[in-house]
Length: 364
Image 1 (tube, helix red, strand yellow):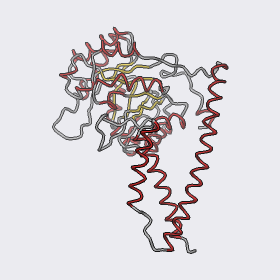
Image 2: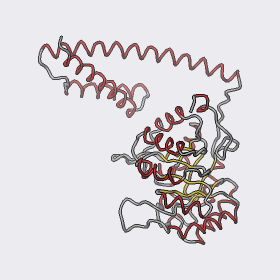
Image 3: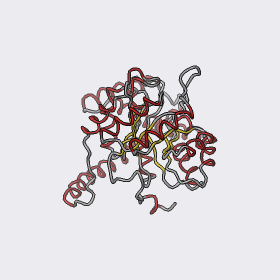
Image 4: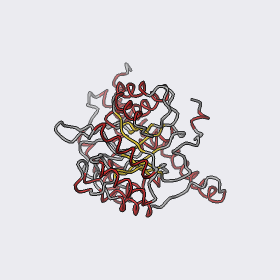
């Protein structure tokens, strides 16, 4: 695919004719009545474009609800007939694809647990060869952009034309606030590399709880995402899976109504002129930062020479602890987040260590 093609978005079911594109429905299809009632209530909000429901649910441990299976597909057929909304289902293997195609499912998505496995993605891709159906690909569980892009490339190689990404956050052992840490820089880098592909945000799986869905959904809109995938249930507290992160169709409708949708205004020159002035200021600051970092690494190499000549360890733990504490204090005084400063200083320290290791390896 040429760079020109990558930056040109063709008109598909996920173009900006409407924003946000809203995909909503229960985490799991539980009963026919539940699916149909949810679909009708979502349709009534006039905010939902695509109905979703989990048919097969890959669970971390056995003996938990793993979906109703193929018997739920006719329920989605009926929901589509009642509302006119296209329907989407997660697939994890070739047999899922075959069954979805048999029952006229409009859109498929590949889940995070599947994206992480190239063999599974390839199996799905092979099953889709020669089929014209839109596919959405969720990011893998762990923060690996190459795996995410690779899954999409496998689908493109078998001829799938309509593909989009879904950002659902990343697993992190120490995470306490989110169910899956957003790590926004990863989907933003995805968007930079593949400007031709729409990007959907899944606040439900990022949050894991309903009280911060609006906040995360709004941030996705502020970051110019194309749409949202949100889990909605007629009785969230009694849902058979992921109850805490689901909301009623009516609450979902209110959430979308309250969202602030911003524009890029790239074609309005007065606004862009002011923005360009501010961006140039940032460019000057960035140039200074890079020069300062270059100077810092030069000093780090000199320190490496001194340590090598005097048979000293590269890591001086007491000194490193002092730097961390000093940086935390400066962050508070400068109005910067402590989390950002620690990441920044750690990155600088890691590069300084690398520079000193190179000195130790040199023969001079």
